[in-house]
Length: 180
Image (cartoon, rainbow, N blue to C red; front, side):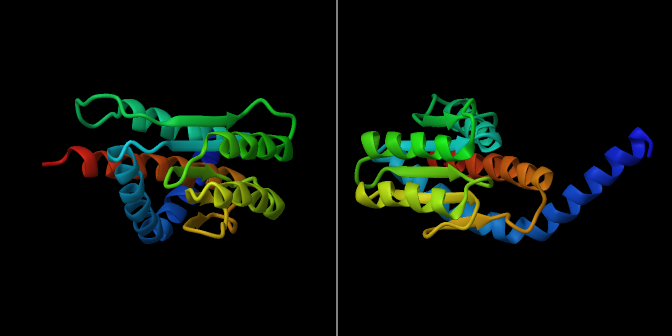
């Protein structure tokens, strides 16, 4: 297989899946962005959390929220909880759980980038956010609250879907806060 064929196949897989997911991504992003914008406007904390490959999506989302790329605007507050250098997903999820349990307060919002989280990891993080009465948005996995699951896609497509979701959600947050 040539390099062109590899790239072409990869792009076609991603384009097809993105097209099929557009409605679902748009629905979740709209609802999530409203929660995030309301939290920012009411001086609540917003967390972007992920471990492993999901940590890079969490960092991307944090940067898009903090600095933006569409409008000239002030930086927005957001806290990243990324465990990208952990040995395994379980230890990263445990660290994120501990941090949310320590820092989270009622009505804070946590965006959990979790395409690699096991059901036990989801349950552990959810227990901490429930205890703190936080709003949680799960991206890449099925969570007990609002979620956008990419479980039926392979790892490379899940990564693309996470990044496009970060981009779309950040753009909608910005439009909620700064559009006239």
